[in-house]
Image (cartoon, rainbow, N blue to C red; front, side, top):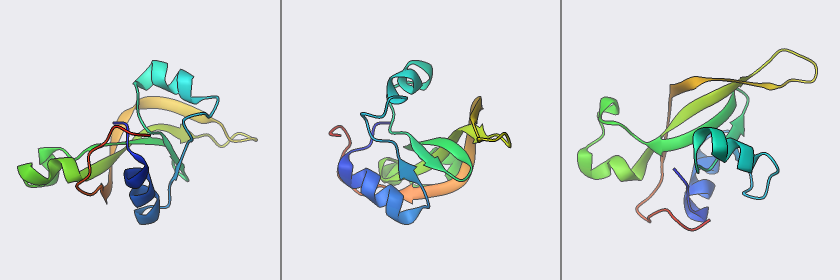
Length: 105
């Protein structure tokens, strides 16, 4: 899910997470692997935000307003640390995205 500027700001303010800017040199490669998303880095690794699934008991009308963090890669213990990709993994972290739609960067 590609988040707009307001949604990125809300996500960063609610979680200890930092968005990769769209002009970051890794974004084109990440987009080829996982699709067009807003990518976030935190202490656990590389993440994206997707609309919250029904499994999180979010009312159907609110699904577009709540996002869930999906981890795509963990940090390794190597020096320097590197990201190691794995199958996308649903986390317990959710974020209120607000009512304004996505689209603009």
